[in-house]
Length: 164
Image 1 (cartoon, rainbow, N blue to C red):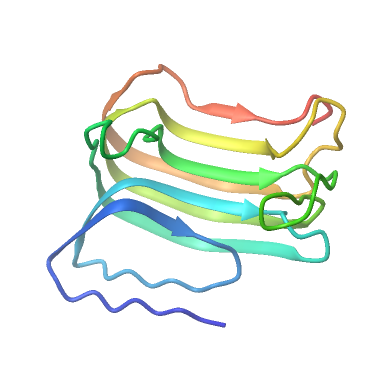
Image 2: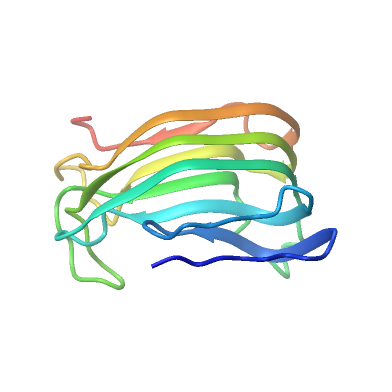
């Protein structure tokens, strides 16, 4: 399955989340300017019977917009990667885990942040517990180039199970 976005305007305001889910191809016109609240690559490894694949992603010239907390109270990250643990906890859509796959060759270039809590957040323990098996999903070749702006924390955040 492929989803194609043909965006015509010179500036696109996505006052929400630019969210990528696995196994769908996305094309965003490089001649446009994208103003987003945050970018997420998520729900990875949620279905035990599937491997999720996200690869060869280039996001550039992004202006992160911090909305008033009364409008968007959950703005925390510039870019957010989320996968489930390898242990199955509940069933989708609210539970899951145990799926594998990979995220590789993702480049986020020329990102302007506006008071996010974390610039980059890699979270591999969604729905998990301290004794769960580490996520089967692997991240590699993630590049963050020419970023500017402000955050409320000093460092990116990576969360994984204790065994990883």
